[in-house]
Image 1: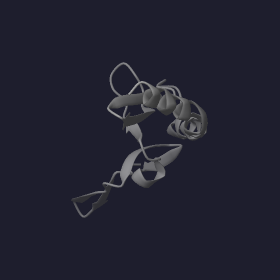
Image 2 (image 1 turned 45 degrees about the vertical axis):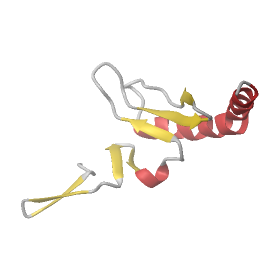
Image 3 (image 1 turned 30 degrees about the vertical axis):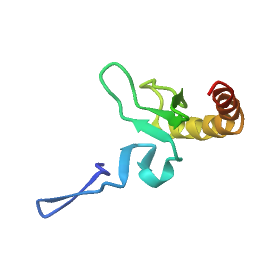
Length: 103
């Protein structure tokens, strides 16, 4: 099933809201938290979620899900949601505090 395109009488309609899909789920843009990017699979690695933010001129980046090809999109999404919450409520606060002290 191709979730990113709808075919109707030889006409293809692109659905820009859909980021990716597999048998486990359809990932839409509005499901991804702020500052999180979804990186589609490339040769040599699977898809993954990454937190990226600029703060006071410094780049904050953290991988929030596995990039293994044997994990489903749903498994990676669930992993990202848990790690995102932990990161934002803990480590991110400390990183920003450290950046503020060094500015």
